[in-house]
Length: 120
Image (tube, rainbow, N blue to C red; front, side, top):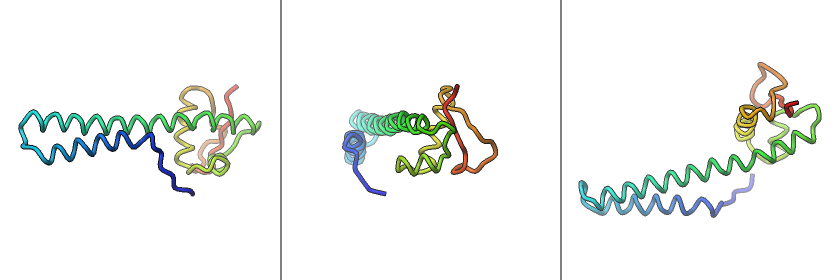
């Protein structure tokens, strides 16, 4: 698997780091300390939002792969085709199933062997 850095995630982490460094360099129980804690939390929330959005961007790729497989596809097959881990594909499929776009074709299978298809 190729390691790549997503530059869209850097601002949230940088903001969180800036807030944390500032919090460590000022006196506790001051307005500056509270402000730096707020900055740290804002940076972390921004990072979590970016990670969630990245997951949502994968969903159309999963749907497109299922559209090519008329009889459905297993989590492992989708992951191999899209170069994604099984757990990442499973999270996308769970979101899509909750929205009614895909249905689980098999029951009782282990995660990699679960099969999904597009809903009717």
